[in-house]
Image 1 (cartoon, rainbow, N blue to C red):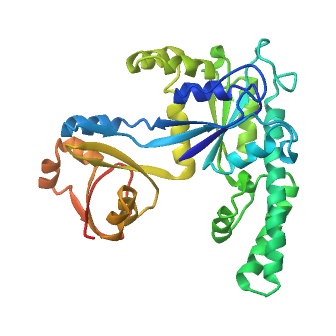
Image 2: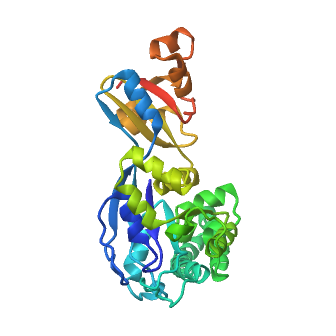
Image 3: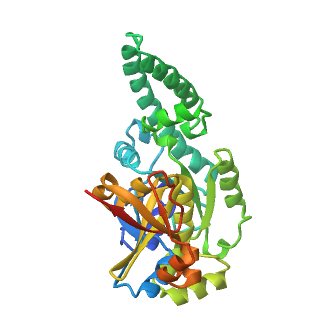
Amino acid sequence: MKLGVVGLPNVGKSTLFNAITAAGAECANYPFCTIEPNVGIVSVPDERLEVLTKMHNAKKTIPAVLEFVDIAGLVKGAASGEGLGNKFLSHIREVDAIVHVVRCFDDADIVHTGGKVDPLTDIEIINLELILADLEACQKRLEKAQKAAKTHEKKAVAEVELLKKILAHLEGEKPVRTLELTKEDSSTTKHFFFITNKPVIYCANVGESEVSNADSEHVKVVKNYAKTENAETLTISAKIEAELSVLPDDERAVFCEELGIPESGLSRIIKSGYALLGLISYLTAGEKEVRAWTIVKGTKAPGAAGKIHTDFEKGFIRAEVVAYTDLVTLGSHSAAKEKGKVRLEGKEYVVQDGDVMHFRFNV
């Protein structure tokens, strides 16, 4: 999973990125501090791995990972090439989902490009630029589709009608993700790679004193806007996340509790990202290693096996499966087997989150 962290200059993007990835992206108080995208690979927190590692006395523990991409600050006019617009737009097309950081804190020492803190205007500036970029891409694709449709080929004709519908929606300054489409049209639209079709998490970056105040006026504005897109809003203080990132795990938990934060911003972003993209994790466990593997919800056993190696999918015979909760409750794989909790599943089995799996294959 690749998440693109976006926002206007000086909203706290790079500060948040540094905190959650410890990648050391340059952070300064001037626009376009971030020019090329900084990339950080982070481990997905999963308490189940630690439990399984102890149970199997495993030599290695390998968590699932995701990629955060800190993309250059966007400005008004980016779609027509202002600032670093074209570079920004090319980078954002490559991510799976967007973390849109919105400034919701007042600080006279940090310049705001618009002269004042105004979350709604900030959101609209970025979203409009992304819509304008998609509008241009949609027009170009429509022109090609119309030429292909002259042959009256059914698929091309259907694509023209779909693109016309999307174009009208974009001309109304609405992102593609808010357009109501049939399941078939929605599947087709994904292959168009429109930026505004990507799912979004709006991240309200608040001051340190407001991190536990979900009812601040600025945060309310962000939440109300997010509701219009059925998107989620997370309230996070980038400054606090930066402080948390340098603390040991035990101290971090105490600090979060003192501040009234249930868990770190990283954990909340990851959980939201998984939910947005329909992702789950299955587990493999043994003396050699315990590992988490990320798959799309609804993936069948052979496809899950293919995450480990393509040979596993090609030569799939069956999967040995036990639910994590059953395994932990009974204390060992042999005990789970005795109680009939270890199952042999075939090619049609749909993998569930937390399944502990062992694949049998023959190539």
